[in-house]
Image 1 (cartoon, rainbow, N blue to C red):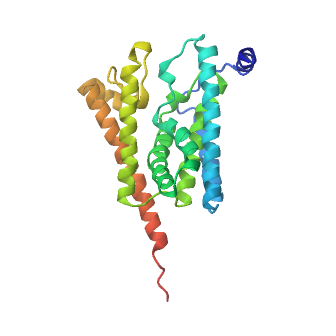
Image 2 (image 1 turned 45 degrees about the horizontal axis):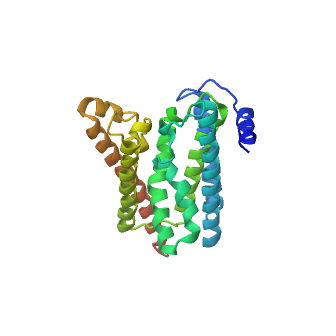
Image 3 (image 1 turned 180 degrees about the vertical axis):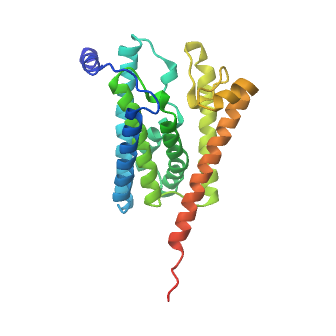
Length: 262
């Protein structure tokens, strides 16, 4: 079995020159992918509740299978059978892989709880990744395509939730989603600290040991300290998610508002 997977990984180890942010590859692939995600989400917006949950669950399964492939590829092909903790699957954009797989076994209220988080925070994270896609560019086609397709799928998940009005538009719904985010930040920090002797983990890009690699926020960390950079980064994510949630709430309110007759 080990030989089979190793052979498969070697057969798909297609080298490439990593594309640059702002390149034709970046702009074209991102624009086409986001457009397809938006159209698919809009087309499926009227699917029944159980069918919609199944769609999201399938998305979680696709993410999980592709993540297993990525981890094996990194371990066997890129790092010569050494595990790189930098790629441990617990980033903000990794969470839908776990959350979508949980949806079928949860109550309706808990599903809405998680969907609100995936709309407000994971959609934001996926879009911002395409603004600064440096972390998606690799020297292998399979890893680069994995990064692009992963975040396009996250955009589909977020937009499907928004278009189908599956998220909670209330302020308390946003507070609950923010609670998930802050708890996840605490877990990420614990991983960054506990796994430090094993490598260089940087879950959520808030390692306490070196400045965040995120554009703009790295400058804040260099001038005002790592902690200041991390806190400002977290607060900025919350603010961005708040804006997305406010847009969703405003749209939901307008849909409920009766039209005045003439």
